[in-house]
Image 1 (cartoon, one colour):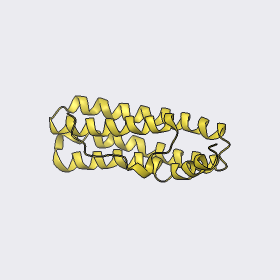
Image 2 (image 1 turned 30 degrees about the vertical axis):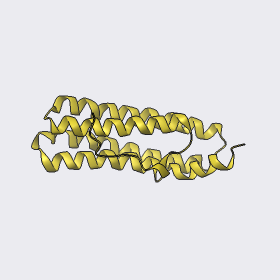
Image 3 (image 1 turned 90 degrees about the vertical axis):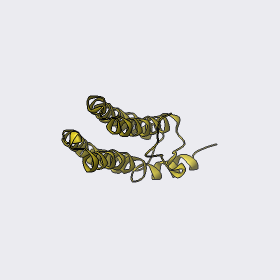
Image 4 (image 1 turned 90 degrees about the horizontal axis):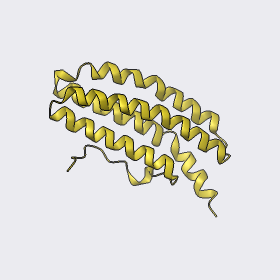
Length: 137
């Protein structure tokens, strides 16, 4: 069974199946990365980090298409936050180069993965969650 170092808080479930599935997949990658690091499977951890980066890039594109489709009024602000997250992603690669250092480097890397996800789910998506709730029939 996969040990969880992070779970997405229930209040960050947005209510859109595609977005929520992406977030769940990112959480799974974070947890799998933590396990790989604990087991000194550095190559696997690095692959997972690249998977996370690719998923985050794909997610922002999908999410912005969904925002446009629901006539979300703050698409540009949301897209700007996504651009800020994209700037954070190369730092994950830098952090991944330090993973063989152990302990603190591992913690820093997991913290950065979580930070990227929360920057999207918490800082950007909560307004969309309210918008979706207001437009449900």
